[in-house]
Structures are given as C-alpha cells and as structure tokens.
Length: 396
Image (cartoon, rainbow, N blue to C red; front, top):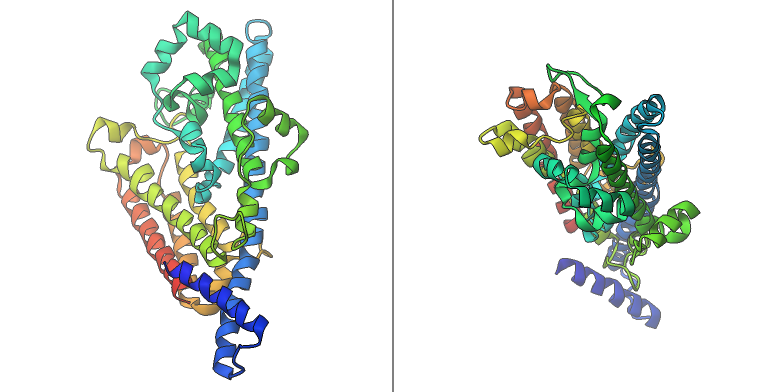
C-alpha cells in the first residue's frame, strides 16, 4: 500500500508543477528533491544490476551450458566407437558442468522473474536425484528409444524434476572413490549406451532452459543467432522482457510501481536465497534427523556442495553491491542514507562466506558438525541485515 501512495505523490507533484501550483517554500522543495533523488539513485542502481549482474550472469550460464551440451553429445556419439575420445569428452563435460554450475549458483539471488515464472529453478536444480526412478528409466527400452529420438525436448516434457537438470548430469559425469572423499570423472567402462543417451538429452534440456533465462532478461534481439534458434525450435521464446520491465520501473508495461519497488525485489531475492542456504541446503542435512534430511545434499557426486553455498552468498554480494566495482548499486543508496546498515550487510556477507568455507567436504560426511551450525548462524546474521535494508528502502 505504501508503494502505491508514494506513486500517487509522484503523479500529484508532476501535475502541480505543470500547472504552476507547486509552493516555492523551501521545505516543500526539499521534499520534492528528496523523492526525486531517491528514485534517481535507485534507477542508477537498477540499470547496471540488470545489465551487468543479471544478464551478464545468465549469459555466462547459457554459454557454459552450451559447451556442456556439446561435450555430452560428442561423448555419446563417440561411445563404443572411439572410447578414448568419449573419455576425453566426459572429462571436458565435467569441467563445463562446474563452470555452468558456478554461474547458476551466482544467479540464485535473482530467482524471481523468469526462473520462477517458467519453473526453470525446479526444472534444472531439484535434488536429491531420484536414483530409483533413474534406474527404472534406464532399463525401459521404450522410454530410452523415445529419449534417443526426442532428446532434450522429450525429457523436458516427460520426465519429473528428480530426473532432470544439474544433478542428473552430475551423477553421470562424476564418481566418488570408496572413501567418499575424492571425486573424479566417470570412467567410460562404468557407463553404458543408455546412460550416455540419457545424459546427453538432459544436458540438452539444461542448455535450453539456461538460454531461455538469458533471453528472458536480455531480450531475444540481444542473444546470439544460435540461441535464438534453440528457443524458436523448442517453442521456448520468452513471453516477457524482465530486464526492460525492471529498467523501466514506473512506466507502462513494467511490473514495478517505481524504482524503490524494484530495489526491494532485489533485496528480497537476496533474503530468499540466504534463507534457503541456511534453512534448507545446510539446515536440513545438518539436522540429520531422518534419512530424507541426510540425503538432502546438493552436488554430492562432484563434491561441489561448499562451493555452491559460498557462490550463493556471492550472488547476494553481486546483487547488492554490483557485479563490477564501478557499478552503482543498492548498496550505494543505502550507504548514503544509513551507512551503518550498509556496512552491516557487507560485513555479514564476508562473515557468511568465511563461515561456509570452514565447512569441510564431503558435506555429506560432515553436515552435522559445528561448522554447519556456525555457517547457519552467520547466514542468519546476513538475513537480519538485509531485512533492515529493506526497511530503509521503505522508510526513507
């Protein structure tokens, strides 16, 4: 309600100025200037947030997923014909998986928009992997034939989230040794043709979804021809330009009443991922109270869990402070009106990352240790600091 009232004030002030009824008294002038300065400062923060944080991150994610898809397809095609090449491509695909994974985790502070509206988040990042259903699928000749023919489009339309995305591919690309402390590339001799077909199809679907994220924020005209063709051929063209909507807050067609509204969503996105890392990604396994909790481990086969968690907090840093040192940011505005609250967020980001990095891998073997509790407490400090920032945006 407060946002709507503020917008009404902006409109009213504009009408008064146009008709000559604005008072020249100093106090009223200061009020008008204050409203304008806030909106202008937040516009200056929102535009680079879209272009240099959201779009740049999704572009790197899409590029990495394209390389991952191509390597998986080449590994499948070489399997049984040139296994030395197939192994090389499996090794390459593992590197591309880690590259793509990093940018996905760096995007999780902005899961609002396309990632949520198109259900891309659960589509590509559900865990734990449904291993029982996977085994049944791989032994179903009819389904495997259909996957071989239909590829990414088929698995997207016909498989549940527990059989798609990063973690299904991860299982095919990485293997743990007997101790569970060392992860390496899967060896060709441990894979069969059905697994190669399934892996390649899921990698295609992952790529399609990542490209859709980029186009949804950048606009179809601002992605490569290859990416446009992927979206057109698979009927995945975005139906809304999320980047333009945020950059044009307050104008017709935008989701946002004003730039304050947009900035609040940016901060809320940061709060949401911090809460997920603390309460679910770390919190559920840390409790260890049931088999479900113990199996709720993100990126267990690649031993990438701790990197995932830390990159999620870095995504908060990028969203709040800007992806580049020269970018104007929400942090800049908060620092101008409440420097102590801005400093609290920055300190809490550093504290959360430091606490997470003290957690040992494999997370599956150490989840119930004190380092997990310490990390959750540090992240909770960050959540509280971000909530205070949202109050500043509302009240100032």
